[in-house]
Length: 139
Image 1 (tube, helix red, strand yellow):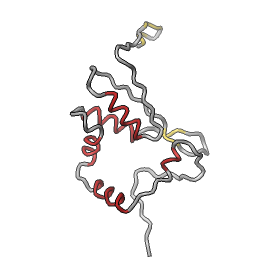
Image 2 (cartoon, rainbow, N blue to C red):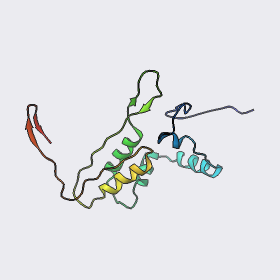
Image 3 (tube, rainbow, N blue to C red):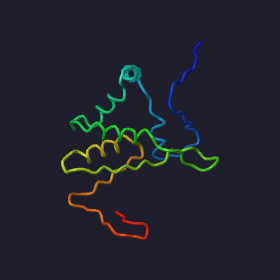
Image 4 (cartoon, one colour):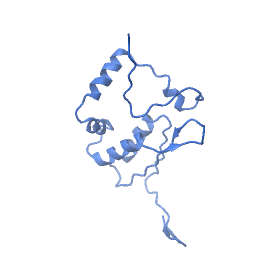
């Protein structure tokens, strides 16, 4: 006899979903080798540090930026109308810094992992416009 046990942060019913981008992740099947690898990773004493180090390992440092991007990937607020299937709201993040630090690569890596991920990177030399409105300065 088997006992069903689920230890998760979030469980969602996949029935009734359309064929959107989110439904692609519902049909993922794991092999026994994948299951053991997941168990081994889960047993790590500092799992968050491992995840931060796994995001763009070719970019050295920037642990705080990588941690913020990971929290943005896993976070989000609930969105949806009454009686509808709950969907996580969109997470928006802006990364600003000097050229050549790997901002675009980190954002693109996060967009590739997320089922609904999109990444808009402004090119070199793009600037914000600022103007003074009735509520103060706007950028």
